[in-house]
Image 1 (spheres, helix red, strand yellow):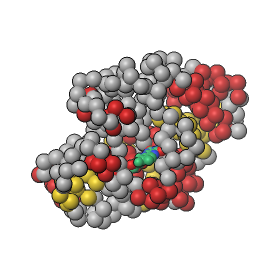
Image 2 (cartoon, protein in one colour):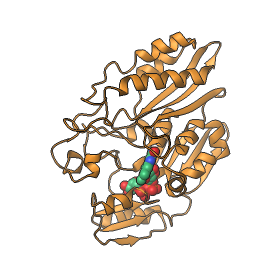
Image 3 (cartoon, protein in one colour):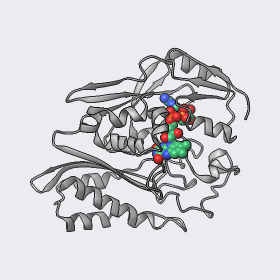
Length: 324
Ligand SMILES: Cc1cc2nc3c(=O)[nH]c(=O)nc-3n(C[C@H](O)[C@H](O)[C@H](O)COP(=O)(O)OP(=O)(O)OC[C@H]3O[C@@H](n4cnc5c(N)ncnc54)[C@H](O)[C@@H]3O)c2cc1C
């Protein structure tokens, strides 16, 4: 492991300047991903810019009936236990509570969870793959059981963040510090596909920092959930996950928003699917038929075709759970 300078800015402005001035610098929050990447020589930053001295980034502000704003440094454990989040933004509390172990959740931040790097074993291993600036995705013809079924070409990672999937279903906006100002972008636009740039997972440029997430309060009467399929029952990443926010009225879905994890290089949603939820009768056979029609355009790799029936079944289960 190379030695590095540890920089401790007190404001977003100083952190942004340090990121721009210092060659090869990395933002540092809880460190649970950053330190693993450094220790395993996946990255060798010369400067770590610690965000934890910056005031206000660890706050949660709720405006009843409007939105909740969660600072980038809020720990996952505090999101999972927050009374307003568990009641009104349940899908996010459940997603946060499903991440890693209590020890990790005590330290890991929502900003770091959203900006963490992929878990692909070629990226994390001793391979100069396309995500590290090489010219090949070794998963395409190699071990690809855990890789994506949509949006992959030319790099077949899946995005590992559970919280990001919940935030996409909740139609969250991400507040980004950029060039001395804050700008808001939608969760969908924050993440990028490998066809745009296979070496990055999001739009952040050097000097830009995720400041907070802003989530509109779901309509009165909505319910939300997160279901995550893991190989081990605890302390594991999602093989596939589904986040849903649904409002039911008179035996039909009045409004719904679904997001998927474990299927694509970014948290995934399908516009047409969300639109076609409106008016869907909530009888089990309708929901089963509806779920069967999803991911018909998926292009699984040699070993991950099982994800298609898996994601359809999770979708069916979550819609039934939320509409009984
Ligand atoms: C054993 C294990 C199991 C795990 N299981 C899961 C799981 O089930 N689900 C899941 O979602 N995750 C899982 N994780 C990942 C874990 O949740 C992340 O490591 C953690 O959330 C990262 O948060 P952090 O604050 O420690 O970020 P750090 O490690 O400090 O940073 C992570 C990355 O984000 C960047 N970053 C941090 N904050 C910001 C910011 N505000 N703006 C811009 N960039 C920023 C850093 O530069 C770095 O690249 C697991 C990790 C391990 C090691």
